[in-house]
Length: 565
Image (cartoon, rainbow, N blue to C red; front, side, top):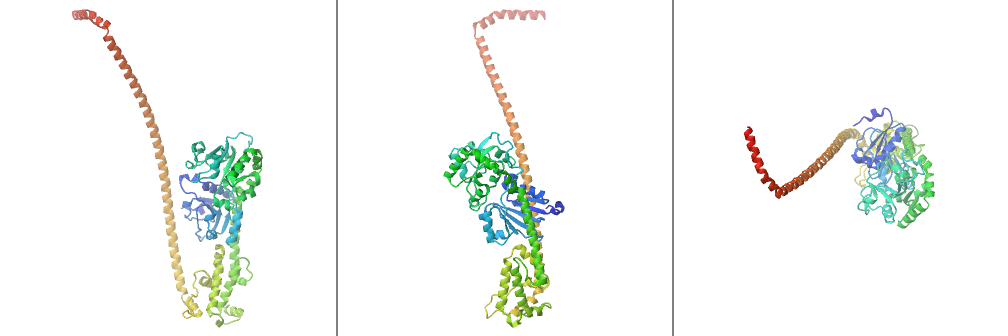
């Protein structure tokens, strides 16, 4: 595994976890393109940035900030002890994400303003609105707006093995649509008439958009319902290309009447006719969107926002730690602001009650008794149980960063917090009134078994370290297997190339053999023709007469030859 700290050379390490697989085809995934565009702009802000495929998510190397691009793949932070910040950027498929998954992060960014407000009301983790964006260094308007366009209507996308209505309706209503995408054979009659290629490389997509008149677009149902938009819309608008998309209220809020939308087939046809009829006006409105897109919806702007969000999380973490230190050392949390105040109040109530039970505490025992103004007899088992439950419930409501701030506790506060406050710590049970032990016996038992608990804790820490070691070994083995798989793909590719050359050579040999067979055939025909002519000559009278007349001459020549010898 790479030494990221050494490679980063003092820079803050950002890890982008995206949902594309670690295969040779990964560059065709939109997640791959999105992640590397974000990487480019974060690096310009001075960070060391690593992009991880979903196959590499659990190779937990060093990181300061982890950004998870949440699409269809689910990742739960492992909460490494190095204090890294976890940010989820929910870009699509909101119906697949639970509140528990959102709450596992330090910050949640939502690609929809309306849905972000709903999530903010349901969870305690901070929620920010961070809309989809486009790389405006690649997607920008055509400098020659008056040039003739090669394509009329275009669509870029795979079939997803389902009918995509905007494509189907375009074909059914005679729109001259050209498609770049795969798996359309089952959903498109005479697909070769419409499909130009099965893939459109991202670096070629801007030129296609600048060389077309209109593009059609659609969304997943849960994206439309929750106000998420397709990145293709932004990229098309950035290139000055008008868009006809399925309807979402957020589209009108963002782009006004520069975008045409439909809700059903009839409205699709109506809007398509309007696009054709009023094309020049629509085109002009789209071109006016460029400054807004470059300023608000570019990767440059989003990277700056993410950087600011991470800084806010870091500042809030330090603020929480400072509040806990203040609580432990000065005012018992009475003046603590923010979400920790309730926990501080519950902790103080429990602390004062425990001081009255006779449990050995530092010299503040007397002061705590005086503040409460009672005696040990005033503390009932049920009252202690209620105080513990209140404290634990308040602690459970805190975010991870707020919970971790309690590591700042020291001395008696740390000891009591570890024993009683954390969920799962030893607490009075729920036994019936006839069999439950007294509060004092329970507390004495906890005190007497403290050393044993510490030993058990050390043992658990040792087991945890061993498990982490095994996990790192497993991750290393997985990485080695991935490397072998990559080499196998490369070898396969080389073999395929050699086979291709062999097929070409074989084809050339067959072609030469074909020529040779033809020449042999032609010579055979010529020989047969000559033999036929010779047989005809031999059968003629002239030939026979010549043979008869020539016999004496040949005989005379032989005699003369012998006479000379």
